[in-house]
Image (cartoon, rainbow, N blue to C red; front, side, top):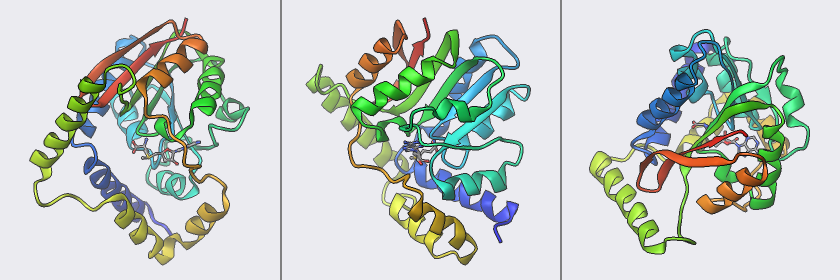
Length: 251
Ligand SMILES: C[S@@+](CC[C@H](N)C(=O)[O-])C[C@H]1O[C@@H](n2cnc3c(N)ncnc32)[C@H](O)[C@@H]1O
């Protein structure tokens, strides 16, 4: 049986693993939560898209305890860890590529913000347009989409883009040197070897939530999809190399 303590330990290990790719992960979380706080409402409704085991949602709720934070993901294992570690969060199981996913959120008023970290690049270009268009139907005017991810500008500014990649590589090397944390594969291998997680692992292989291989790493794809979906103002709020916090304001 998966206990609260075990789930918390797995999530701490997840956070270390993610930091191996993102030494600034906590700083980016902080910048993102600052932007939610800057909306000026003590009780915002916030949707966390591709929440994983809930690292960002938990930090949001810690800063803004009166907020309604709704974490959404399609992966049964990561949702299972999140539910066991953070019973105060109403995790929703939904694939953002499936039309109608916003109906599963149980919203009783339009959301003030949708947030996401290291997740939306998994969604291909045409599907991304649908995700943002559906999101726009549940965000209030002036509401924010805040997306922290590696987003590249290589189609528009190739030399700058190379520099951004290199800055990120140098920073990662400086922080971790010869001792990087365990990687994505090692973390999943360890998860698969834990007998207490066998039911969640089995659900994972049959859920159909698997990644289809086509990704959206270009900043321009996100900007275009957001404009089409009704977000007239779009800009970068925080950046380090190609790791950035994109902010779009719902018109
Ligand atoms: C690298 S993890 C990041 C998780 C979390 N946001 C964090 O920063 O720790 C990417 C997440 O996106 C989720 N994801 C990818 N495609 C998705 C989709 N189509 N619908 C819902 N979640 C998705 C994955 O299940 C995974 O939890």
